[in-house]
Image: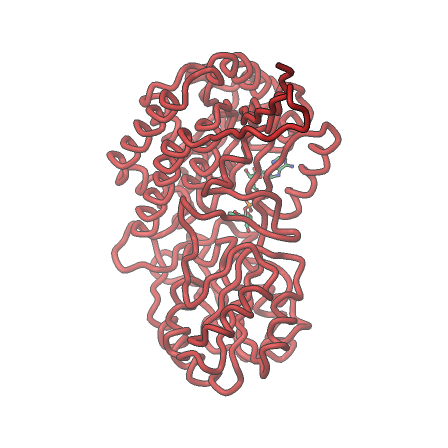
Length: 475
Ligand code: NAD
């Protein structure tokens, strides 16, 4: 763990193992932090805030540039660590390291653009000035599916704003966090500005983040269930929160779209990270008139995908995170088939070529999916593409919006009027229009409804770490 500029063990003296989900091998261990450790980290961050919040935007920017350059320099090492610890194919890990580094670069620049305002006052002898101040010490909790970019997406804007941070990464992927903290150390960040507490049992850390008076803000990325619980606890102490939670993205292919092009898009985005992405399509609504060529193309592409250890060449399907994830995916597939879905391909565990030692599930396509199936409402977080058909734009908009989630949605149509109508009608925070990757450091990422509160990335991302302060001057 990294507390007050020092690498340290947990006060309890215990550690926990980290395993490779592709092979089941133990690849390392980290300290098992608890309440005492997180309190020490929060104290260090509160002390460091006194001076870090007074640094100039140019000084903070310089640290972020250094950390960005170090990430690029160490890209291959970070990517290999990620593939071993999280399982995604090496090429995807490299892409994530670049995406993660982009947040440091973007916020190195945004640090210098924290503007204020002067406002006309109602009295002639009065002047109004509005400034933006850092909120204070930030508690950050990150998930395992994007174990590096979810750190920089929080730490980048927090540091740029003048906040200090205590991070608790997911228990499945603490090694990526350790590598990132070596970079923050090498970038020369002063002691206490960024702190890392690894923990096998996250609840104690969450309780401290939501109760400790020195924490001003909680930023969380993870499941909607845990997010709701943390949000309730934070509300009791009026802490600021950002919540990046689950999703259930509709992917709509209209009758005027090219079914083969759309199927190619789905095959790329749905199986990215083996479906373990919050913006992964979870319901494919395809117009009845083009469903057949769409499914044929999708099936052909999916049948060519190879599962295996992401360090090997030609692998596109890595392991799922653990056995519980495999069981959840398999249960959704079996439930759908028992209720009348047609299994187009996949639908079983992958066991050959050593995959029996890891948590692999075959890329799967289901057709004739209906609203009574679990997969229609539950986030899958796995490699299953469920296809439904529709007949009119009104019908598909209503069905697409019929979910408690509101993170990402996708539309395929060449018709600009229709694209606008659907973009405006869909109740989701991120919408890809003939585009499968509507994310970047410069773009606001976040959800509506139970997908969360607040945005990460873009100028919106730094606003989450700032408080507005008004000065009324009598002159
Ligand atoms: P999770 O909620 O189980 O865990 C996320 C983090 O919360 C981990 O660090 C975990 O240790 C911690 N945590 C778990 N219980 C806690 C508690 N009681 N108190 C404090 N912390 C606790 O989610 P996960 O399975 O790791 O991640 C997958 C979920 O994350 C999916 O639902 C996915 O959609 C979501 N996600 C969302 C985004 C986004 O930006 N909206 C991005 C990535 C993942």
